[in-house]
Amino acid sequence: MAKWKKTLFIVGSLLILAALALMIPGPSPEVPQLADSAPFVWDRTGYWSELQRQFEDARTKNCPALSKDIEDRLLRVDRLLQEVENNRVPPEAQLLGWLEMEFFELAPLVAACPQKANRFVRLQTGIRTALKRRSQDWDMSLRTSRETLYRVLYGSRAAVEEVLLQSQPDQVKALQEASDEPSATPSAKILGMTVHSGDILLSRGTAPTSALIARGADFPGNFSHAALVHIDPESSLASIVEAHIEEGAVVSSLRDYLTDRKARVMLMRLRADLPATREDPLLPHKAATFALERAVSAHIPYDFEMDRADPNKLYCSELAFDAYQRLGVKLWAAESTISSPGLASWLAAFGVRNMTTLGPSGLEYDPQLSVVAEWRDLDALWQDHLDNAVVDALLEAAEGGLELDYSLWELPLARVAKAVSALLNKMGKVGPIPEGMSATAALRNRWFSARQVDLMQRVAKKADAFSTKEHYRAPYWLLVDFARTAIKE
Image (tube, rainbow, N blue to C red; front, side):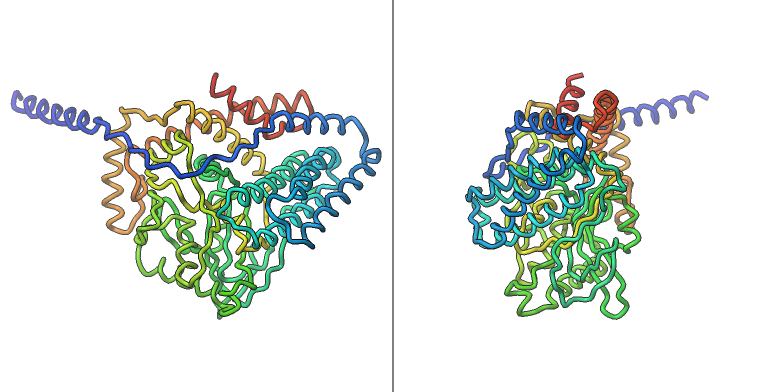
């Protein structure tokens, strides 16, 4: 009996020592060199409040009384748009500032009378198409070019979505077609859109970290994932080539791609008039075929470090970039930069080692690509805005010193889970912790997700109370204020 007690004591002591050893935290992640850039800042709080006041005033009037004002403003924006379409417009042109202002100030009236919402969305689609065409002549390495394109494209999208969120789902179209960019590559139908082999799908997931991917850059965006479309020329079978955090590079069926709920999907296509596509019209299909064959021929882990110098790992944007670059087309006219110390510290804690990357959102502004169509899940759009507002407020707190945290008590179990994951990875299977992600990074990810969800629920309650009182949904700038308050609470 005494022998058994002694054995149990020794085993128990060893287990306790092993657990204590597994609780020893690793070194703090070193923050890489920041990008030589600066965050874009709107700094227009007073203007947003004035637009909200105009919306509240418009709501007190009936739509027939507002009809002439709305029509006049629509015509003014349309005339400015025609000037942009018909002239070589430099990024510093005052015309673009007028276009931005007129579009912003039309939004409160349309939000009050959403019968005009579809026309408003089509107008924004026209602005995006025209400005992307004009930006083909701009030097996208210049800050002026990038800021102008971002202000008008991102700003007009934000105005559209404020209108959509004040509308009923049956008042607006979920799918908005844009530029009918010709293509000689094989095609198929996805989400009511004709897609071609080599097209790029930008999307926004609904997971908490999707908001961080979309917002975590000097130019915050709306997309968290990029994927390549491949269409088999004989069967017309559509496949999606993408890189997932859990699995690395994979080839997904169209059904699998659509099963993963998305708040938005944008379809982009390489311009047919580029020298490379004029010389070889099938170049996009060849890029997609290369990516597909590479993904099925060998396991390619996810690139958490965001290191394009390492060809053996790929993150989602890098997959599309790599496939096209091998055929002489360098996508992302302007790379995504991270120059905020707080944000860089958080990303480093997740394993990122490069602060100049290829963010999915950044591809929207590449003049080499045409936006063919955009589809929004109108039910998920509100959730998208809540998530973004919370992450924007959290990133502000990160600049103030808020650090990603985790429980030391969970570290031993996480390290065991990581060891199990490593064994499963060697057998070609997916483990509980993604390949390439450390145990501490997984715990920080879990902490961030839990914090984001909790704050989002608090913000949603504040937004519901606002809607009950005011009888309309809180605009985005108020959601950010609600999130700031929730963080302090």
